[in-house]
Length: 245
Image 1 (cartoon, rainbow, N blue to C red):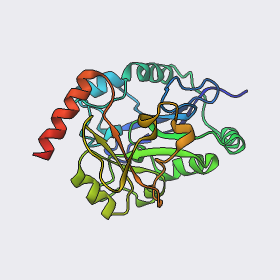
Image 2 (tube, helix red, strand yellow; image 1 turned 60 degrees about the vertical axis):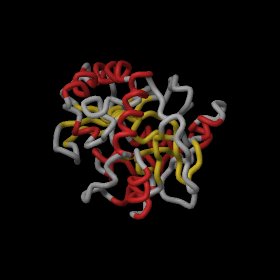
Image 3 (cartoon, rainbow, N blue to C red; image 1 turned 30 degrees about the vertical axis):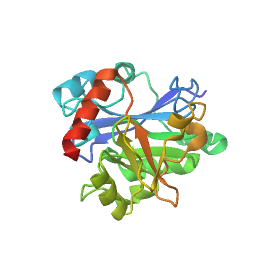
């Protein structure tokens, strides 16, 4: 019987060595996320800490690396961690079965698209853990804030967008072979090699049908207006102004 959620991998974070876990959800019950639509969601979590606690105490480096949007940094990450707490609780309770070749076959047969890193940076988990899942699906979206690190596995360029917060970061990432996904303030203009997220232009378009955010290709770079809770949006605008001055 197909379950909704699975533990794919447990091990040491490639970012800081702390114990982390990769969990996939959405095989049976689809995500309620109106933007993404039906994507298999993936969660990279600290094994030992409840997500809200880890984020508030800065104990999330193993999964978020040096992302400037973290709660302990600028406090502008759009992810609502309360539902993620429930995923972590079920993991701690041993509710989720282990991911296996059976689920790989499900992905291969039905081509469910994968959201590589619904929360947490995908590069914290070994590339070789991810690739069979990505290849079985063949359809995916994903982002990393770790693109600038010297030890970032460049094989990720074929699957992930470099997540950037400024024009300067975008230029650097693009010069290194990454396509970029740039978060912008609500009134910021696009550059000539960017297009606006299609869902932001037309909320009838969902990620499951768009899939432009899928790594290196001749497709344009993507920008999207900051979204989330009002205080997070405000924090991001202040941060954006500080790095542009």
